[in-house]
Length: 194
Ligand SMILES: C[S@@+](CC[C@H](N)C(=O)[O-])C[C@H]1O[C@@H](n2cnc3c(N)ncnc32)[C@H](O)[C@@H]1O
Image 1 (tube, helix red, strand yellow):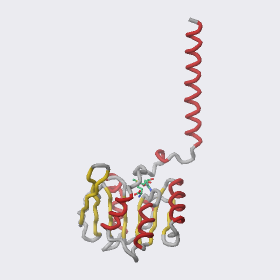
Image 2 (spheres, helix red, strand yellow):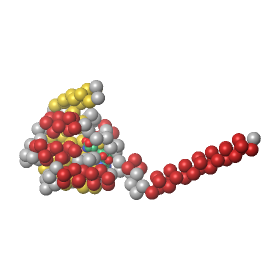
Image 3 (cartoon, protein in one colour):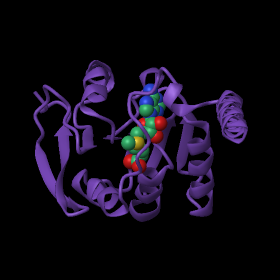
Image 4 (cartoon, helix red, strand yellow):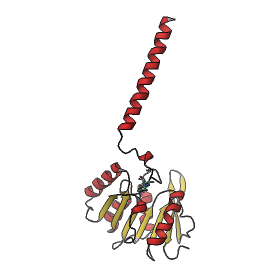
């Protein structure tokens, strides 16, 4: 009886200590990304073969300025610059991802052509873009649509992986195999998108 109650007191103490330790670790994180009220989509890196297909689908080439909205680890812009000679601008709110992206872009030697801003996509100036890439969510695309409508110029290509831009008509769609399923890349040509 004594032993049993001793061990339940011990177990309770361990539980309290564990909860306290987790709480302290969480509080110590300066930017818990899932708590950022600006976030409209979680970080899920796009598979490399899909990145390449998106850039091909949007016919990205030298002379293009690719804007990736929610640029994650910078992979879309890295490939756009390294493999297609384009310039790139990324916007990302998670500090660690901004740092990773800048490192990867530096390691690939394309830092002169790609800039990553730690900035909310809803505060970005999109007017210089000739190509926009988005891997967000339908709800995020819906929120973003009025800004795209205000700022993009005729002829800009918008490539969205997996999620449509509600109310816009894609000029082309492509399917890509991802983990045994078929996923869609939507390409819109601004000006002919309604
Ligand atoms: C699905 S990930 C795509 C990352 C990258 N573009 C790729 O294709 O691998 C979406 C990214 O958008 C970022 N994001 C979400 N809301 C944002 C906002 N309001 N401003 C800037 N970035 C945002 C997330 O942090 C995340 O890194």
